[in-house]
Length: 392
Image 1: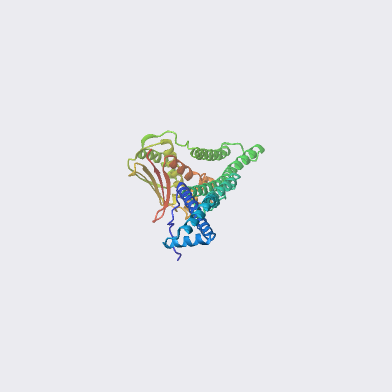
Image 2 (image 1 turned 90 degrees about the horizontal axis):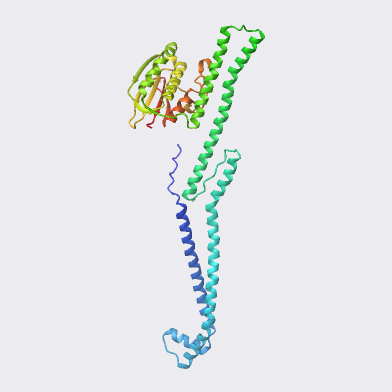
């Protein structure tokens, strides 16, 4: 069993706090170095002056230091010698103060440059990674150095999250492009082949042949409309105007209109439509519910039963829930919710499997209303699909 990782106890300080601490430290260090240097040089200068005292003056200084009174001649010699040395000594102390002050300033400047480069290094790494990201390589990441400020930490984490999001979007875009090409290739091939066969006289130009080709055109139209819906969702233009409505009534109308389709699929529909007032786009709600009913008719027909529910939520939102007795969703639930053109059975054709964009469209409609789509499997078998709509 692996040990749980320790929670990070150190919290990065704000950049302003780190800067203030660094400045205060440099000031204290500079003053301390200058004080120590001048104090040491003053003591050294005093010792040098004492060594150069005349013998009688040195004797007088020793007696004064011991608290005894020297004779007048020796004391006068001492005072005269100290007076003669005071002016050069003061000049030397002033020069020493200047030198040690400059030396401490240089040392503090070097330390400050080191600290500044340490603080700025993540920003340089960010600049380099941003250049790589701008060139189209979305795998660029920035390692977070230890001891960084709170702002730098947040910036690095945000950049890495952005790069991860862009990389995921690039993968999805690449997959979507291949999926669109795959989805469009089959009906276009059928149309081209059928039309060419009729022109060559291989197929008769009768109503049945034209009706078969019309089915392919209708399939292309559904794909284009679903792609248009997703593009509107990306541009945040899917829901332009909300209005007050009872979601239960909208769902009831859609279920009633879809009963012939559900009866043909062999699904018995049960409803529990509790009043669920909210502000929503009725056409988009009908589109989402119809897409879910269509999916249920295609994938859950073997279960024989479908239950449709609506209910208000405590936060003021509403929920639309569909429960079936079909095979349920696969274990990789993310593939269902994220990948467009997903089908429950990869072997299904377009005629039985739809465009594969149904759940992506429903999710886009839910997100456009501030909500989300949830997918789950029932313990007793079957799937649960729920649209959560947030209040406006």
